[in-house]
Image (cartoon, rainbow, N blue to C red; front, side, top):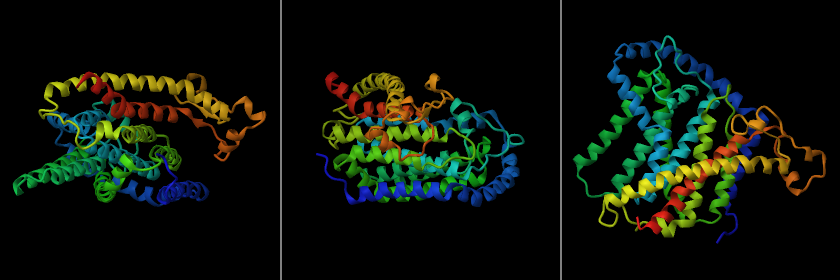
Length: 407
């Protein structure tokens, strides 16, 4: 049962709200950018000769290898991998990696857009963008390397999980796991430079920040998981947190796709948290059936994937369609001015301040009037609800289908 708001919840939300107000009042993003961007830009230019020397090793095999590695540790890969991890029965690991991924994505992209430092100039640097995802990544700012940051955090946490929950191991096995993680991080770092996507300072910053985030997460992950599965006000707190984090996100010097990525994974985190909190005792406790065991043989696990993947894609499509229809209506009712960059053609480039603004204002209109009177991009809300619906289906709807189908 939902109880009152605890002290730490109020403190967390009020702290973020205080940052939003202070950042807007004192223009903190521009001040930080003025201090950091010139230095980082000089480092990027200074690293260009080193990038060119590495790219003299140009070979089709290296192009393909580093491009594949970049895809394996990219956000789209984890978006597809994490649902399968949930359905394999390793729910605790899956929800921790999902929340850690959302945290890394927000933290890394926020720093990118706050500093707004360039990537290596192309030309003279040769930039290899073999996939659509890489082409979109190239439109972001450079520091830090998100691939390096995410790889350090997620592979490091996976290593921690294996060493903690699989105690039957010897020194050689442990050293092998450490060597595998170190090799992966090293290859990703070298690959980002070889592909012309990042300079050395971006990679070093990504690895360094990844170690900091990983150390922090290892201190708090137990408390976070306990709150998600048995805390009070879980859904309402996470919804408030998601909204405030969107307002706390720094504005880049020029628009980039980074905020879109954050919004998507912010929605994923909310969907996972709200879904797990409601269905933990049914589908996500520690005694559920796990893949590749007599309780969940390989055939049943494959059946889960064949049922689950189409289901979550349908839910994603339906969530987007409902949000595109419902959100503009809600915003107009509340008198919130909105525009749409791509999802709602009738709102592109227009400011729907609402004809009702000149009429009598109700309580809800007065409530939302505390926010700045500018046109908000409704696509942000649509994207958030779309991915929240997808994530909810992963941990609630699809496991219910598995139960009915005896999978």
